[in-house]
Length: 334
Image 1 (cartoon, one colour):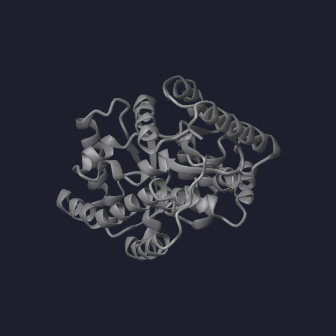
Image 2: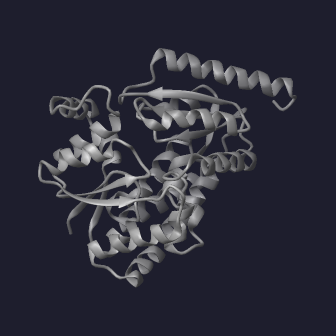
């Protein structure tokens, strides 16, 4: 079994069906004991300062962990991925490209998945069997999400971490499933927690460390993590593989993400959203459309490097929560 590095969520069922070990390099980077050292390594190798911190981290951690192959998403993720692929390829890393289609074209997506299968030498039947084997774990993650927003027994950070981990199942679905089952048993035994302000979290996983915990320490409750929930593939559990990745909103146009946010805001009774944007990322432009389309208040928070919550961001979050509390009081809902 060899390790296959990932730059973002791809049809992991194909990699697992081939008996390979998927490794989401984003997760390795952000959980590293010294992520700043990885940023510095990329910059020492020539990466400019005004390049996305996630891209620099992925580049450096790919070299540090010694992955021989990297699945890089060439359409539907970071626009800086192409150049990162080339710098890694120049250092001997074999690049396996995968592309989502902007308009969710089913035929083109199916061809991409077929090409992906052909590279790993697995059949459609093998991939479907793997997808079915992963279903119980994805269902458990859906239950974890329910425990978050319906019963308040799982924190926003825990919800985020478990859902994000579905991009690679931590390299071992069997071990991941065992840890997840144990966590669910523990979570179900917890007391119900409630807060006056219920928040959703929009955008890419934050590079700011401890952001979820900081927000909840200020009296709010994060009961929806948009992109991590998409990583878990729960919205496509009842479909075939191609449809599952068609329903996955992150790599496509922003309007489906706005519709998902509004649907979940109504279902989960959200008071507002935190929209996290990464410095130097093209998705910052989408913040304009998110604020126009989402029906509850939105606070945009920007991060650049893997640091703790800074004073300015803390003040902005606290002011936003105070505004939501006043708003609820005035409407007689708090």
